[in-house]
Length: 343
Image 1 (cartoon, rainbow, N blue to C red):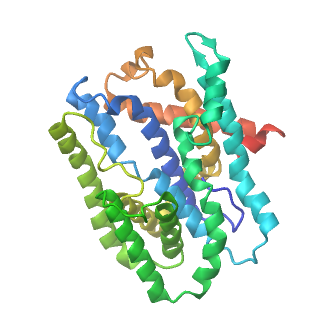
Image 2: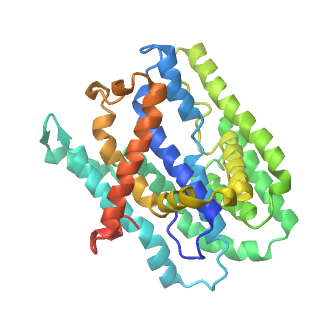
Image 3: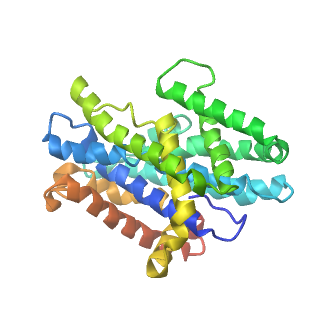
């Protein structure tokens, strides 16, 4: 999802963006169902909660990619260029789409109410206008951290860097276990993904792939069955395994990065073209897809019922919404004024 011209396209990063875009859409497609534990058949609820537990790596993968590319920039830092070419490309679409979704949020009972839109805009300094826009509240501040990290990474001793990474991993474990600490701040926890992305990007990790696979697949299994078990024990949907800043999610995201890095080049032909296309427009897809989900997520409209089971409905609707969002993004990207909305 990162918009950057630091270097030519690297296909395995394109692959990761594509997979993360698919996972994000899936998370939002299944959203209305995950809190219905006990209200719908367990089999249907598990489709939503289970797929959700297996896709929480999506946003962390986007951050790994950002760290890999932006922290590896070898050019001299130019503040004006950075603010215009990097920060503005994310901040401007965020502001405009916040206004668009605030307008959409003003519709209820078949009509538009100005007061609702105004309330959403006024609250936007602290609360995202729409559920997916939370990402920018945490991601945009990272753009002010990146220029400070680059010179540090150029001179830091490799062993000291490993210690820094280990400290961050410990912090993610503390966050997962809800251990109180003043260090449990979003800026620190998400900055660690930048560092891990840079670290994995600038080395050959193929020798460690078996370890990453064992740990990552173990965590995915733990997420799936752990969510099922805890929800059953508490009688409601449980979010213990769903954190973006928790050690389990870090391990899964790292596994996927190393897996794509090792085997991504084996994808060829038309599949490679589709992957690169989705990757190119991934930020636009992220921004626009909730518009198409407004009627879908209203369960009474029957979109999910068409597929008879959530196990079919969630993947199928994810593919449909992703495809429609891709076409819409490509169309906007061709229009001189509106292309700024989908950089």
